[in-house]
Amino acid sequence: MKKNKSRRNFIKKSALIGSGLFIIPRNVLGGKGYTAPSDQLAVAAVGSGGKGTSDINNAYNKGKNRVVALCDVHPEYAKKSMDRFPDAKIYKDYRVMLEKQKDIDAVTISTPDHTHAVITHACMERKLHVYVQKPLTHTIAEARLLRKAAKENKVVTQMGNQGGSNPGVVKVQEWIDQNKIGQIEKIFAWTNRPVWPQGKNLPKANENEKPKELDWDLWLGPAKKRKFSPGLHPFAWRGYWDFGTGALGDMACHILDVPYKTLKLGYPNSVECTTSTTYAKMWNADYAPEGCPLSSVVNLQYNDSPYAKNGIKLVWMDGGLTPDLPEFLGDDFFTKRSSNNLAVIVGSKGAITSRVYANNPTLYQKGEKPIVFNTSNVKLDELHNTKWTEACKAGYNSKEHLALTSSFEYSGPFTETVLMGNLGLRSRMLIKKDVRGRNIFYGRKKLQWDGPNMKITNFEEANKFVTKSYHNGWSIPV
Image (cartoon, rainbow, N blue to C red; front, side, top):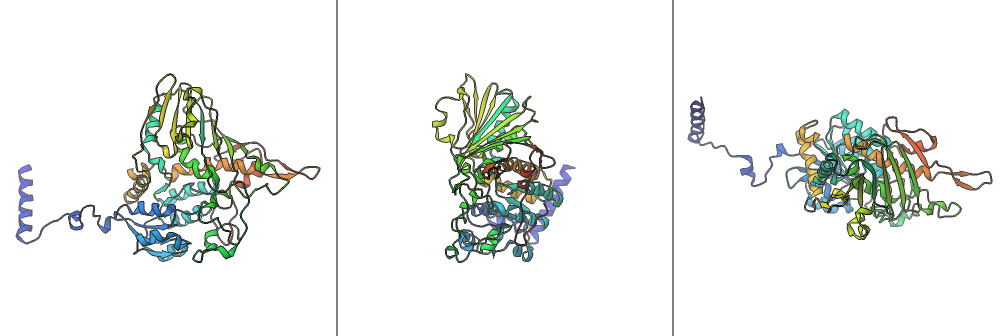
């Protein structure tokens, strides 16, 4: 049988040669690294400047895919992307892009937090695969909706917390499963952010300073209508509740991914917060309910983890605050430059630390020399994004899709746990008049959370922060 098969192949090749026809691989026709158009993904970007520049470039994947459309409310800000992809069609309004451009397969979304959900949901309703910057959404209700919509529309999804694809996460999981640090007792995590304005109300409007090409109404999207305020675009929006999620929303998706994923934390059961003293000055202009706090401490309690008998407490700090850590980590722990953005998983026999983006996780066992798993040479942005594009080609529920480290099936609940901290911070700042007419804080300090039903059970007023109002004709079915 083998001889007959070989003979048939020889006759087939001989006939083709005799007829002057040759079979040449596609990669030879197009040169090294060539990908045929039929094997390329047609990708578009909403938010093409700033972080969107690298997101769409990574989705392009060195020519393995095609960039067919670029959308940005401020084209001048996205000039670098537009110069790199001159054949892409240019839009200001993503709704126009989705209506007119029918050849799109997948979209990267790199816009301010308050617009993530409305844009992402619209794309998924059109069966487009999506890659969305962190945090996935602006509210808990939006995160729950996007997870559901991804399933219903059978699209491949990924949140842009690139550290999720770091091999360091796998190493930490290995250490946890091997019981290297014993029963888990507590998690500490912190960041040196904010490095943008926080602790203040929104800046005053000045329409004379608005960039000529910026479509301010489109930038506002579902937020309250307001005149242009210098500084919000393109960066400082992060520190204001109407548009951003503060230091916690910006950095926790990078720093908390390792403990949340490896310890299988799920929904928190309670949240308890403390904010900077700026907010305590309610009797003068320093009271700033429009801005995220200068610094904060967020305590989340998780009762259900396979790695702890009595639950796990997670303590998050930002604005330069740092926790009291176990002595075995060393007196010089906070003098190291790498300690600015860190997560520490503390167990009965030791601790595991991981830097931002899950870099260089380190195992500390009491009385032993620390073990460092070096990940410094991993190109995380590229790896995380290109894994998504390859999964898009393979299709929904393919092995490539199921192997993604931050699809909405995971990053939806993970984002909810991050935003639960912000819910606690905002409810902590609620004020009312006392019997003498003075402003007092009346938000309860510790909130009990019913995760499956998305509800605070012991302080009804706090539930208004589970979702938000949508303005100017924008809506989403939350």
